[in-house]
Image 1 (cartoon, one colour):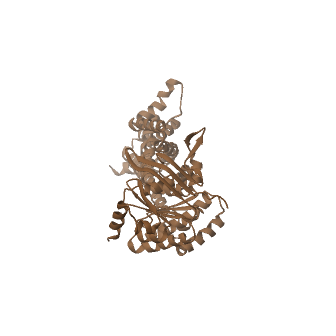
Image 2 (cartoon, rainbow over the protein chains, first blue to last red; image 1 turned 60 degrees about the vertical axis):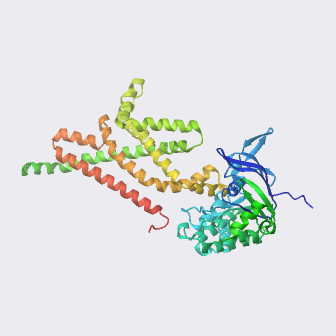
Length: 258
Length: 225
């Protein structure tokens, strides 16, 4: 049997903004096919951690490995230097990211949003990119809106298209940054349903979320963070029902009260 | 004005229009050429100001402060007369294009910089997340959106430029205002000539504003409600 290696490995990750330390030494590994939810109070650093994994934030200290390759930096004669923009872009293309505010490109139609990466970054043919995009739009239930523009769509519809846009790059893992937090309550379900289906298909996922029931039912592992540290990590049952860590218990109690 | 004098003025109208018409062509050509110089250089300056490199920021800022804060007429005189002292003689039209272009670049760079900064950072981040380099994200995502934002500012600039080119008459560039002055000293029909001049400037400005408004509408992907 081949030696399995983690898809993502994070070692001693620190991130500060000026004098404010947001991440204070994070270690985390994500295996192929795993679904990991990051939960915790706001300001706990979970979004920053996710953004570091996509290198939208540059870590202050520590290492992130994607498929055993150091992310964002190169070792030259034992010293680390920043990667070139092109190298970093290639590594980022292996991960899909879904943002809280969707960030669809407003000057492009739905279909153009989805094929932009495949055609302009991966240099695949337009015909093939369109075929794939139509499949993906079908999958997220947005095929009828392929020629619409983002501003004509609801938040839930935009977010489903954003997921299709990320999937069009055929990523090895998907990062979700509070993907439903900006949505009206009645639109949350349609996005979670798409995410759930993706999980069932075996996609590796790292999910920052406030949807506790979703996190509990979809994740293999739940990571509870507070004040820039991982307080506790384990299967959903352990975190949500059987935790012996007081910090975890009080957070779970607080979010389950309403 | 007595009737015979009015009749005499109107008799000259075709001649005035012909001379001013040639002047208008020069004015438009000068405006267009200066705009091209200003837009290209202004764009480079805007990118320099937005870049993460401190030296590039400084160079662009120093340029901006010099060209924004010296009167354009002074700049024209330096280019046209002043440079002859160091052995560079520019033709009047060349000096005017350069002068308005260099000055306009300072103004347009601010228009461009402000437009680019209005584009939400999430747009660039989304572009990076699908594997785009910084340059590609700028080119495919940020600039097309920023361009639309920049249109009103650019329109203001071009209309201002069209009118400012009248200053080139001081350096004997045969644009519209210069020709109007010549006509006045030739015929003494001061009122009629300057009235015509005003009408033509107004008409050209309105035309530019109309063209810009059309372009802006065309770039709206979705009809605005």
